[in-house]
Image (tube, rainbow, N blue to C red; front, side, top):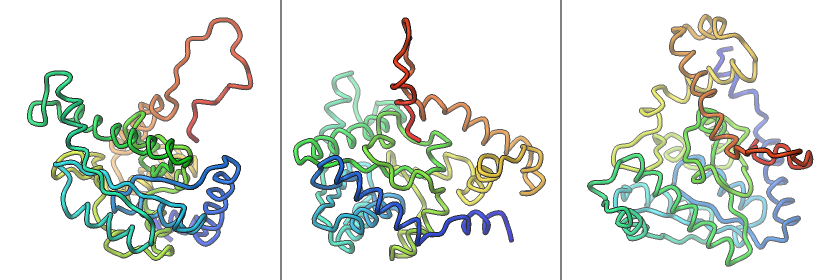
Length: 280
């Protein structure tokens, strides 16, 4: 059995669905919330979370916000709409172009002159503002759609797309989410479409990460789940040491994003608050 096959088979997906939906159902009930709202991009992660939320609490208690702006492709919007309609959940298409433009104008910038990365982060954080406004005004919880691969690698915007009240798929690598999505009945097109945060035209996650998820997940699985040393991972996957080290260094360098609250402690910090910053 290859490492990728082992990784995919490491999860009992039927039990995973039962566990995740039970977690969502219990959390919504304990919080006294009326339901779940999430950002829906039409890609596998957000589509899987939407399907899991619907399974957990019913389609009438789940709302999707589709939040494009002028640099998001029409195809992405249509995919998100098709998933929402397939699942039978309420959705709203909210054009954020004006919000982004007004934010950039405050600093004398524009869509054409703004730093690409900074502008992209503005878009992600504006999406979270909309999600929490909707949630706050309707007594709902925000479901984050981050997977384990991107969380470990820090491939998200701090205080943006990794923010939420509940993290249904944070324990699953990208390749495992694809398998989960298949069992949830998501269309093959959604399962296999190239992942993209849709922050600028032509952006793809794998191009920015430098490797396909199928390779990244194997490296992370062996290093973290199997606790194998870098040399053994290189030998098993037939990969250069420099490449495996670069993935591991990225995990280490992005610890600040996974545990974002860096406090300055004066005196004794209350022990019952230890660990509140962690998203794991």
